[in-house]
Length: 115
Length: 222
Image 1 (cartoon, rainbow over the protein chains, first blue to last red):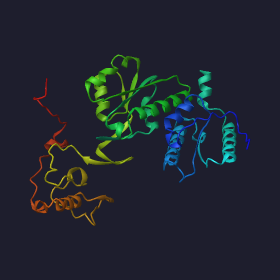
Image 2 (cartoon, chains in turn brown, green):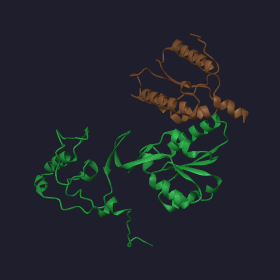
Image 3 (cartoon, each protein chain N blue to C red):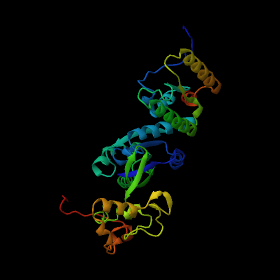
Image 4 (cartoon, each protein chain N blue to C red):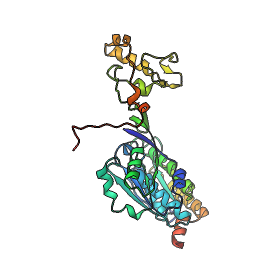
C-alpha cells in the first residue's frame, strides 16, 4: 500500500484500547503532547468484548478533565477502524494532525518552556 | 464500606486558593474500592491540578501519596517527616480520614477532595447503594437481614407505610420499599409469623440523636 501519514505521531502499542487509562492520557499531556488519540477496533468487534467501549468512555472523561484544566478536551479523540483499513488509519492520522495544528501547541508545554 | 464520590475539580481548585506546595493524599481502603480516593484517583487529581496551575502560570508543587488507611495513627504517621514540606493537604479519603489527618497535622490545612456519602455495597462497578446508617442497635436479626433504618425513607419499624405501592416507595418509583423486601425475605425464610410481632421502641440514643458516638472496648485496650 505504501501509504504515508504524518511523521510527528508517536505510536504506542497496547494489546487493546481497553488498556488505555485516563492516567496515560493525562501524563502524555503533562509531558507535552499536543494531542492524543486512541485507535480501536470497530464497535462490536472487540476481541475482548468491550475494550473499545471502555476506551471511548475514558476518552470522554479525559475530554471533560482537560477542558476543566484549560488544556482543551478537543485535543483527545477516539477513532474506530478495522485492522485491514490501512488507508483509513492514514486518513485519521492526517485529519487529527491537521486539527491539532489548527489548535496550536499544548498550552502546558508553552508555559513549561517559559518558566 | 464507606462510599464516597469525587468532588468537582473546580471545587478543589477553589478550596486550594493560593497554596503553593500541596500533597494529594489518598487512602487504600474503602475509597479505593469505590474508585473515588485511591492511588489511581490521586494520580488523576494530581496530574489535572499540575496542568491547571501550569496553565495559570503558577508555580505550584503537587506531590502524591497514598496511605494504607487515613483513619489509623500508624499509617498517618508515615507522612510526619515530609508534611512540613507542604502548605496544604488534599485528602481524598472519606470524611474520617480528612478529619483524622487534620487532627494529627494541626497546623497544616487539610481539604476534602471527595464527598463522603454513606456506608454501602458495590452492586456492580459504578453503582453503590446504601445499606447501613450505623444506628448502633442492629435489628437485622428481626427484619430478615434487610435494614428498614437505612433502606426505608421513613425508617419505620413495623411494616410498610401507606406510601408503598407495587413494592416501590412513594419518594421515588426506583426505590424499592424496604418492607416489601423484608416481607418477601421473611416468607422465603419461612418466618412470616415474625412479621406479626411488634417491634419494641427503638433506642435512638445510640443513633445520631445521642450526639457524637464512641465505642470503648476495654478488653482490647492496651
